[in-house]
Length: 70
Image 1 (tube, one colour):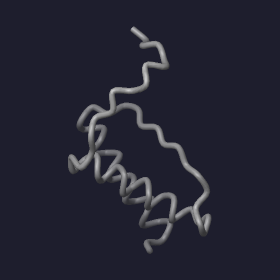
Image 2: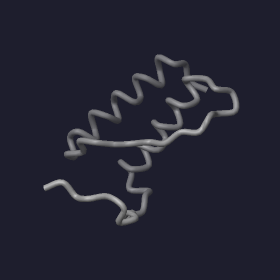
Image 3: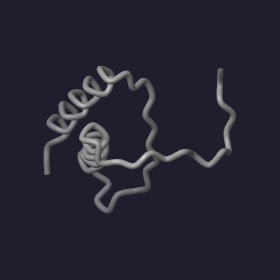
């Protein structure tokens, strides 16, 4: 497991790559982790962002439960 600082640096690198692609808003929902460690949560987020950047995701068209802002 990476330390908190390594995980933070990893997130910063991924954030820069997402910004380069024009991403402006990313949201996550978390449940509590087994160990509750910040590094566990940070690494989980970094893994998810890495999957997005690597194209290992499927588009979700939403639930049609919110209004689009023009």
